[in-house]
Length: 151
Ligand SMILES: C[S@@+](CC[C@H](N)C(=O)[O-])C[C@H]1O[C@@H](n2cnc3c(N)ncnc32)[C@H](O)[C@@H]1O
Image 1 (cartoon, rainbow, N blue to C red):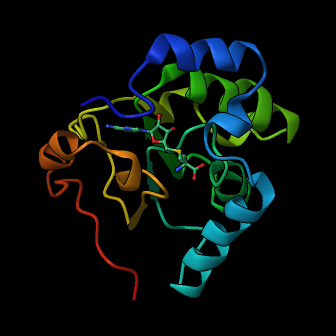
Image 2 (cartoon, rainbow, N blue to C red):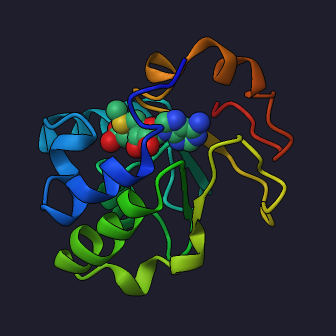
């Protein structure tokens, strides 16, 4: 069974129509803030390296890039078009492109973190697993990126 984000052409069409915020669930400010606030209550520091799995168009990413040290935010997503909108529209609008190397945004739907060059302090996956078909959940391994809980 396919998930709602598996039709990449349809998602890309929606992004071209300017609907990237709606496509990842809307509530842009509310859910973006909620994610940053949650991580801050868990002890997130600007020096931490963060992996945002299924980051979409950077609803949390915009806030995390602003908060974290330059280059410390990484995001993956099944849909390159959503990453593109996040970088070229949302990150650009906030003037944050200098803090986020484009290579930190990785198109991946297999939970393959072998590209990781850093050891992450924290990972977040907001509203991702709730949208995955059962078979995709099965392929999500425990990550080998050295993710540890914040103390
Ligand atoms: C509801 S959106 C949430 C996006 C983001 N976490 C946020 O809070 O704005 C779900 C996201 O998960 C992505 N996604 C779905 N299946 C995925 C997979 N197998 N691997 C990575 N991302 C996936 C979708 O493309 C979509 O961007």
